[in-house]
Image (cartoon, rainbow, N blue to C red; front, side, top):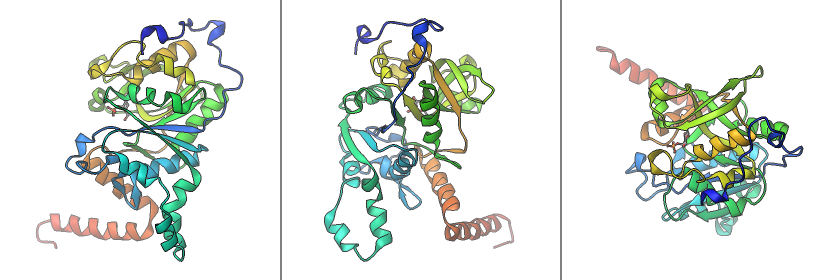
Length: 316
Ligand code: G1P
């Protein structure tokens, strides 16, 4: 991608900056899943991190469920070498389905994703950054709005997190991104926005910085890994060269989109869970089990009570 691929810059406030009247339906979610999962080694030496369990299902199925519950019908998986287990997971397996024909619950568990979603798989040949990964999906997405879902970020809340972004996009025609306030120590590992909060709580984003030092950050509002973009994000990817960590950052393309067409921050409604580290994955498992199963809740209460007592001298 070269700078000459970028569309002409539209000054904010000019008539061209107004959104198209009909932004179109968001049908596809791009899922960058080519990373090596080094923060979770040795768990991820042979297993794609996206298939590590979150209570009773692989993490990627939690993401896929959020996509369907948000009205989407296709996933564009951006994978890489060693990740074919992901494609296999989303494939049909007639011999297994036949075997489970008298076990409807299990049959449903192994077929629900493929029943509801079309899967498109593309490869990211080289690890050049998140923006590059999303750019690899350009042809598969085509000229339509789309979502991006980072599989390390799970959101446990009353409504699917992506749905609120889809609604904002469909109402306004502007790109939307999930954001949350973070403690100072988390700022250097996130994309951080600048903007103005509106009466309805959403934020008009004026700028974004990827992984700033806490003292340089324009706010303490961080980007969480859920986005909805118009297709005009694609020519902006890589248009300003490589960014933080020497990578092609999605955040840099978002800064151009915010400046030229507007971009809306939607505050998270729920709990953000990071499955990208062993500790985060363990906590996500506990929270999902706690929220989804009365049996798990009873077992966890018993376990935590016992551990608590065993920490107090003289009590076992
Ligand atoms: C990515 C994005 C960052 C965002 C974060 C959310 O960073 O680049 O802007 O805040 O996901 O989890 P990564 O976690 O891939 O370093």
